[in-house]
Length: 157
Image (cartoon, rainbow, N blue to C red; front, side, top):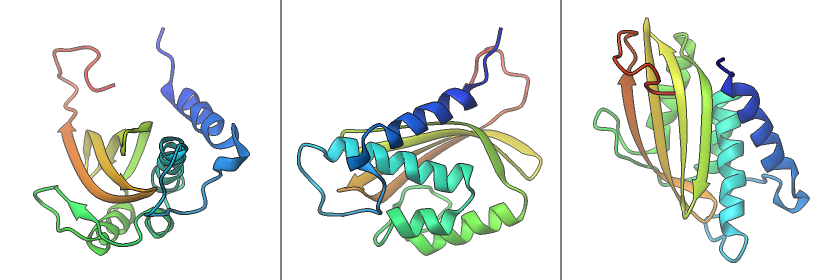
């Protein structure tokens, strides 16, 4: 029996964002520190993932969590939030979509893992982010094309 991960992810997101009213997403703070920083980063990652990948609002997500410097490690992209926003908005305009969202944050880093559909290709995408305070300042990604002929029956997800 295969259970869809979307309800579990959505319930996890709701639990994370509603469990503590003192941790409602407000936008990022690059100087955030202290005993609640990891929880604040988890809340920020959950909200960023929701805005970017569920609500399909990359400009809102980046305005809230990527306010300045954005170091990009993708070999086919330039550093800077404007390059990322241009790519994300153009990809969505061309029909890019995703599902199977999983996300996590801890120890100053966060990640998202999705299945993406774009230009007749299905891929598994892992995005890895570094925080300063509760702001995202650095990004790495790994993309694997899903062919449907994988030997491993549980490949990717």
